[in-house]
Amino acid sequence: MKPARIPQTVAAPVHWNELPWGEHYREALEQQLKPWLAKMYGFHLLKIGNLSAEIATESCAISHQVNVSLNGQHAQVKADPLHLPFAEKSVDACLLAHTLPWCSDPHGLLREADRVLIDDGWLILSGFNPISLMGLRKLVPILRRSPPYNSRMFTSTRQLDWLSLLNFEVMYYSGFQVIPWTRKGGVLLSTHFPALGCMQVIVARKRTIPLTLNPMKQKKSKAAIRQPVGATRQYRKP
Image 1 (cartoon, helix red, strand yellow):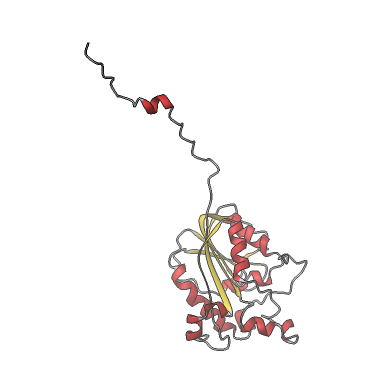
Image 2 (cartoon, rainbow, N blue to C red; image 1 turned 90 degrees about the vertical axis):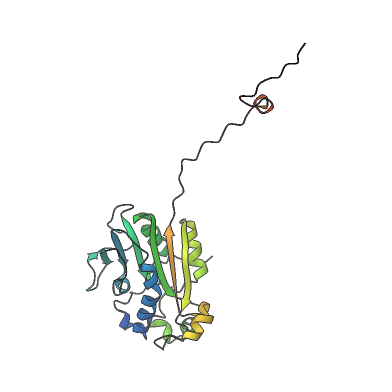
């Protein structure tokens, strides 16, 4: 398997409009997340990365929303996403909108998000789909050096495998925006062929297995089985 960690990576874009058809991508992603954001409750929501900070999350009931990134005008907490300055199990939801594609250590980023999330906390991932028109354009040598084609594109199967190792329960995953240069991305194609969407989103929840197991019930002895408790013996009359 190809390792996910690389020694260095290109700089991530600061705004969606830096990407070709970036505003179309942002609006399509917001439309996908809107019904799920309405189901999230708690106290703290982390939006990790500059692209996550520009995602509209007004439909989420979590009032305290913090933007975390190394730079950018929307950054409220300037920190390395691989070393979040938050305590363990202190965050109710994490939004990683196209943060993994420009991350040098995707495994480390997911582990850090898992560390700060509370039990049953929400994790939202989004990225580009390599099995799409976006992936085909990435094969062109001239386009490979410019964003978003200079990013790393992970398949949904690979990301689902990472989440299963961290014991996340996937609530929803799908592809969308099959045609990148249209605002709606081809509604008919996105409805019937979501696997070919240029973008993909995954919504998961952190599950925790207790280490203290329930004690096993003691097996009843054969004598107790033969003679039930409370049973009376019958004697024959002489």
